[in-house]
Length: 441
Image 1 (cartoon, rainbow, N blue to C red):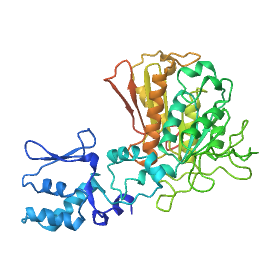
Image 2: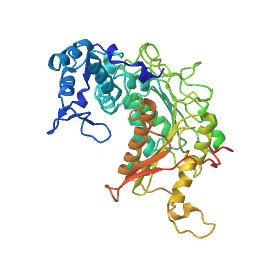
Image 3: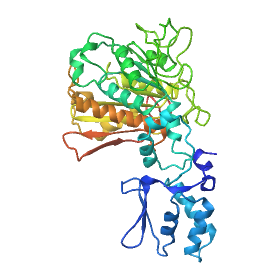
Image 4: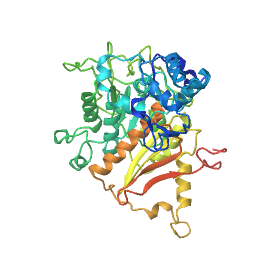
């Protein structure tokens, strides 16, 4: 049985229309519910007026039977089955929650995520027993992030601030002055310091309830990515630094205070232990729903654009491991992010080849489609393009981890800063002859 199928309005203590989905009546008597945002709201014909009575009764002060009784008082021609079915339909559409659902996290986390959880509830069109379910999924998630520059730094900030349980960062570089126009995790005092060392320190200071680890390591081929997907390498570890004053975390050895390695191949954990994410509470899920994967991670987040073949390597490695992944970046004023899940929709190579076929580049025989785009030693970027790409990347990652909003994988989306009103959305069918995911791959 699916999670959605297991949730019934009869199990709710005080069913209500979500506060963010407050209903209203139109001039012609219909009921609009779910907000005026495209993709969320719905309009219900209500010639007899009982739907409006129903949504008004679902204000979080009554149990399911009391809601039905209130509707029947005003509309005795209805049956209780009609009212109950309408409540079930509203729940199935994602417009209902339980005003008395227990909050399964400590007060510290209630306060920290008190703005994010309502937004998830707003965008969530899946029936759930508790609006905290998505936050618990984040809390249990393990994410591998490759690249903590501009895109990766902004994405890492968003993931850690949002409460992802364990973020493992990989980057080979040191902080340079030219990084500071767009890379938010670094300061002038970090110049010459390994990026991953400075990044992990900054991210831990942002949210001590999240386990942030890292290793200074260069990805030089698909084999290297396969090793990374298998989990941090066992290596000599440095001792854990003391927890900063005022940090409480979750339980003994809670997240966010493990030590960082001093060189390539070292992982961040107390001596003699593996770097593990904090355990979920009894009320929370221990694992995430996802394709069968050979990796201990739930998601790979790619924020590196070099070497040039790194996306192809990532695509092949994630297909082999059965691991979902997302990527993002910028090409001048064009900022995009991609969403890929093995076995569901187009892979990165399907999408790339489909996009080249769709465009009319008017290339001569034998010319590589990449020649149509400028190639420079460094990709021109600003705090705006890096921030946008990192935000889109984090949004895609959070959507895959929580299911909010639901995304059909195998596409790219973004924004063209030259034409803000021109949305970017690229999708192509999965290619059966794709050398990466096709039938003979």
